[in-house]
Image (cartoon, rainbow, N blue to C red; front, side):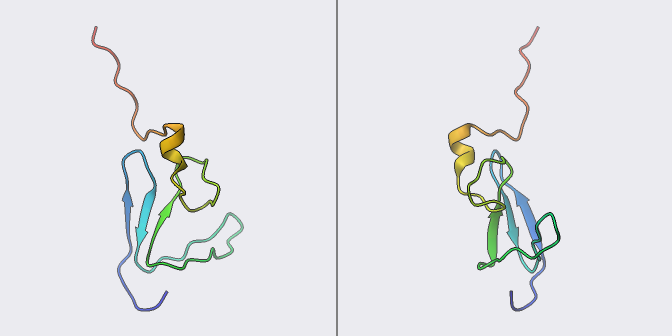
Length: 73
């Protein structure tokens, strides 16, 4: 990535983490993951076929980032 932009990570409800700015993304072994855009979406559901990036599969599997509310007693 060229130029310095402050990093910003936004957690999308029931979706990915949007990463904007100059941030290096590395895999579990510490190797850099190619990044070709200034803003990328990182998978949180664990089902994406292009991990670590999001491919929209969270919608198909019904991934939720919040706990369902308990019924009133």
